[in-house]
Image (tube, one colour):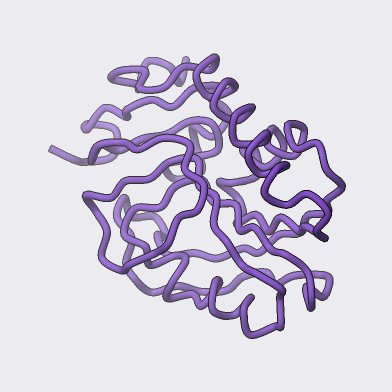
Length: 184
């Protein structure tokens, strides 16, 4: 079965993603010049975005991962967040950039205490970079410092975003057909 058949439309092309990540990399490089930068990606969705983003940042950096869950097998965030994997290294006195695939309700970043938790570890600064922002779904105010694209309230997959673990490998952001996820 070809997973592309489950896509109603391509929302953001592979070339558009690459171009925007290049722009983000240039801006992040300027903003963090001379600072000790650690990118903290939220697994699993942000891993593809992180891989491309770090190659566009021209200053020295390191990266680490946290894993959290707020969806389970559902298509909407439950608001209940579980920390599944914590950082491997200390971020004390370092500038932290949280890398996320999508910010929609805001629960993942806020209620999991990711941003607050990282700040409490005496990081020099904590900022947020997201590939996609879906402000129409926002339940919790989350400050986004770097935003790749703002998207409408559609179920999007691809480029790291999934539905039930599938579609992450698509090189573009696509809108999933409602019959696939039970939407209407």
